[in-house]
Image 1 (tube, helix red, strand yellow):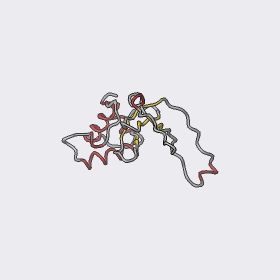
Image 2 (tube, helix red, strand yellow; image 1 turned 30 degrees about the vertical axis):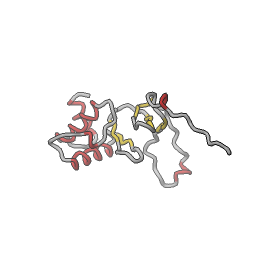
Image 3 (tube, rainbow, N blue to C red; image 1 turned 90 degrees about the vertical axis):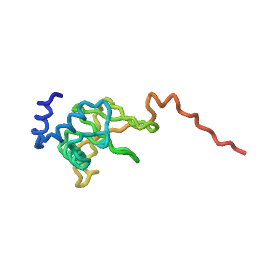
Image 4 (cartoon, rainbow, N blue to C red; image 1 turned 180 degrees about the horizontal axis):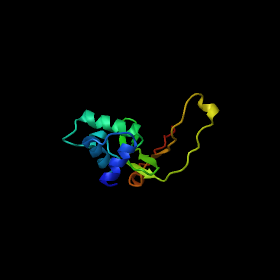
Length: 141
């Protein structure tokens, strides 16, 4: 995504295109990984500014936050819909093809309103799976 496209996407979402917000968005768009907020190093921005901009981008729907138990949240600005695979061993996050996830019937939601449904696959990635330690069976005496 070029500079003008980033600026247009920010403005279309109701966000001002500040230099710091633009830098965060450009960094996420260029990243092939799913960086954490701490991965974003910009001498013009304090850590609080980076976190605030990430929060604003998530709320505007331009960035997705991928939450990991016990680890720092990671962020994803890829425009196409996709699911994620998270490796239990190395923590790597991979993009997975999008599959439509049916929303639950409205009667089961009560007064809740579903914004989106996303699948997160968990297991061992292609790198870690071959190194999996064999499961030891308990010996019976």
